[in-house]
Length: 100
Image 1 (tube, rainbow, N blue to C red):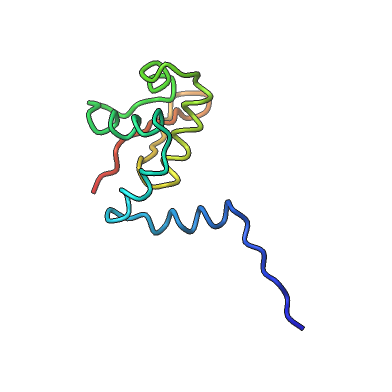
Image 2: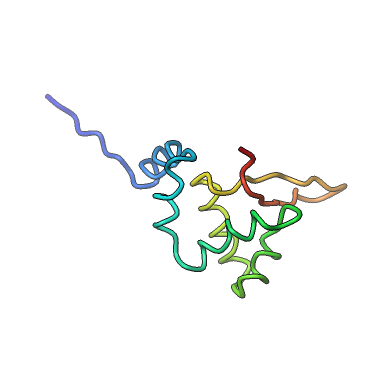
């Protein structure tokens, strides 16, 4: 008797994201929305890592929308995430262009 393995889209996307090395970035970028495609370009020209609030202001979208874009771009390997720890509270998420 054979069992069927079910591949969930999130799993497939994650595994595909692992394949998105420098040579595949153009293919990954083609699937981005117009607004989301602006984020990696801004990250490359930014002088420092940016927060979701800064990205939201630049794009003219809500902070929640910017956070969704940023999380997706990190998953695709088009942005890197660093955590900035303060004295108290949760760490601040900062996003920057990948260091290659």
